[in-house]
Image (cartoon, rainbow, N blue to C red; front, side, top):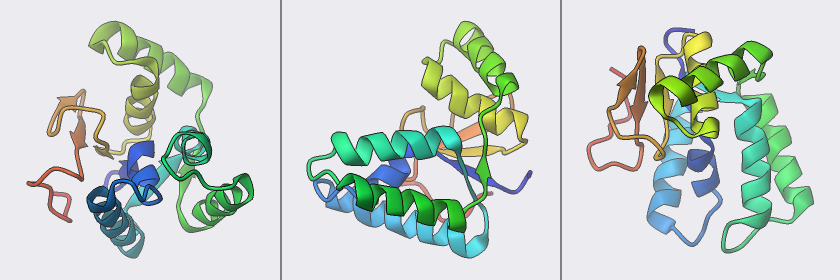
Amino acid sequence: MSDKVLVDTNVLVYAYDRSAPVKQKRALEVLDWLVATSLGVLSTQVLGEFFVTVTNKITEPLPADEAESRVHNLLRAWPVIEVTGMIILEATRGVRQHRFSYWDAQIWATAKLNQIPVVLSEDFSDGQSTEGIRFMNPFSAKFQLSIG
């Protein structure tokens, strides 16, 4: 999967968060580009966090049935990586060695163990690289719709 990009929850959530219109527009552009190029990958962690966040934590939450429909559509349109025991173990190492929060470590471990070199997220330092995984903030002014 070396040419793939793992999308973190915050990028998906901004596509539905009307309280942040600039980030919403950018998230939609990035997600559309990732689908069109077949570069985007999600994880089961991201889908679960997405559901919780869009139904409870954004300014205008989605009804549960609408959020469920969105998750269903994402499952059909994107490759989805399941979180495994090995990912959990690697995430614990990420917490210990790199001082990630556990959930960020799990994103990192998912990318690392599935050989996905890029994670799109605003939760890491833009451009940070940890053990071959590069974190890019798609909301950064310098972000370009190309992974190179």
